[in-house]
Image (cartoon, rainbow, N blue to C red; front, side, top):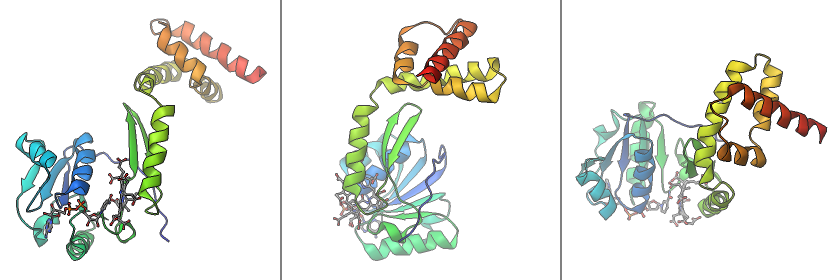
Length: 218
Ligand SMILES: C[C@@]1(CC(=O)O)C2=NC(=C\c3[nH]c(c(CCC(=O)O)c3CC(=O)O)Cc3[nH]c(c(CC(=O)O)c3CCC(=O)O)/C=C3\N/C(=C\2)[C@@H](CCC(=O)O)[C@]3(C)CC(=O)O)/[C@H]1CCC(=O)O
Ligand SMILES: NC(=O)c1ccc[n+]([C@@H]2O[C@H](COP(=O)([O-])OP(=O)(O)OC[C@H]3O[C@@H](n4cnc5c(N)ncnc54)[C@H](O)[C@@H]3O)[C@@H](O)[C@H]2O)c1
């Protein structure tokens, strides 16, 4: 069994080629568009949604079968046709150029897997069963969506500001760490959402010190 290395990629403006135009290709393209990638679909037929995205200029569609040169400018390749031999061929061509390729019909043969994803603004949660069970990865993300609701869109924004204030105001790394840990409890998060502390940095730091003390005493 392969061991996998998880990471987040910045794909803005980078060319990602998707072979195939069915529901699986659509899912991959959708995720890539969320990352503002430059998406190219190569497929004789595509789904209604893919066609809408192509018509709206959100992605580029080559209306034909895969050709060998298609992978050349790509930073990532997604082989999602319903023809296993085509998927493998495109993956092999990508590998020769050291371009990572995903194989939709046999994940372990590719260079990377696409996990199930939950986005809450800057919070990105992913789940992978490394190909053993996409259904389980999906179920776990559905559960996380309940635990980490829409309020996390705001939590992430607020925490980003709090962290920059703490970094600027608290020189001791050990204390900084303690305050930033105290800032992310459920209780603290609901306080940040409901009070206007932003304009008063020293009041915020004092409040965090209080919270950190309370945690230590507990
Ligand atoms: C997470 C997600 C991301 C995405 O695609 O964007 C994703 N599959 C999703 C859903 C899903 N896929 C399938 C089902 C039906 C139930 C089931 O089979 O469990 C469901 C669930 C459903 O539909 O509810 C069928 C399926 N999937 C693969 C095969 C081929 C095979 O295994 O042989 C077959 C069988 C085809 C057949 O039956 O012939 C292969 C792969 N699917 C992966 C990713 C990669 C490993 C994921 C991991 O990290 O564990 C991997 C290995 C390759 C890859 O694509 O990277 C996306 C959730 C999106 C969301 O959250 O909405
Ligand atoms: N990874 C996953 O999440 C997942 C889920 C379900 C199925 N699958 C696998 O992925 C494959 C694709 O699934 P789907 O539901 O999107 O299939 P689909 O049959 O709906 O779509 C296949 C697409 O590939 C295109 N195609 C065929 N030959 C081509 C070629 N030579 N060059 C370029 N494009 C070509 C077709 O025009 C079509 O648009 C399935 O065969 C299945 O094995 C993967």
